[in-house]
Length: 398
Image (cartoon, rainbow, N blue to C red; front, side, top):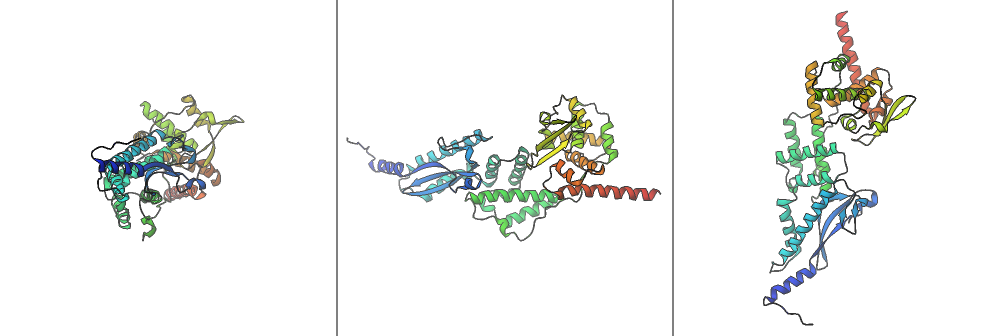
């Protein structure tokens, strides 16, 4: 059989050569991370002249979430969005192959890298975008993803860490200094550093940066743990129970807050509460679950007051966003003279109330689902502080 070439014979030969030796495919878990129970990275591999070049997609999934036959993500809660990103990356790779046809002076990996990264610089990969991609891919709670997104928005608004080349010790120090000028609490500053370090570690694994600058940091970042927690006094607690509230949104917010005070549930666990999971033992309801935030077991008994609130809503608690919930609580707080009433104060009030009624601290720790006793001891210190303050006030009156 005879093959006919067009007049532009040289260019056509280049095209055949390129199409024969330049190809790409999607590769999963090249470094065998899943063997140790970790998530595997999804990469795109270009092959040419028996040489290979890998580029990260910024996506990681577990082994049971990857369909090797179809080269797509399955079972993952964000699989639709992640597969759309993979499709976009395939389209980009096809465009690169097509552009290679127009390179009359030949084609090599240096040009391939410039073309691939040149497109991604503007459209796909800068460091905040990478953080967004990792946020979607990470198997964490929605509340944790929300905190990651707040941090990513901060990176964009600050504007000093945008490209991967910005990930230096000097920029980490600059971020720390900037955060301290914003009057942020030390615990919040610590969390921002924790998130940045986390995403940089991912970038190191994906070969986007050589090392994590936190390894060479000359100063220590304090966790900023509070010695005490914000909780209500008995008088304030009674005021919330008795204050007249007519707005239906405020009524629901007050009931949710009181339910927290009677159970010790955090906001995320409050929203995940399922009465059907309760066990009825000797006429009392017991609730056993795992915390949304930490995946730690907790168990509690529903006090009669908590059951009464549940009955009011046919055993299905109202649902409200964390932001709206705290907005409503601030309004209720202003009605009883408590500045900045917030959802965590309900959990803290429950802890100090349980301790004040004689519940052992190790049991309180189990009820709250704390990962260690040191967390619970903050509530005990708060109770001791309040007792000392009460005696100081009494001493002045005697």
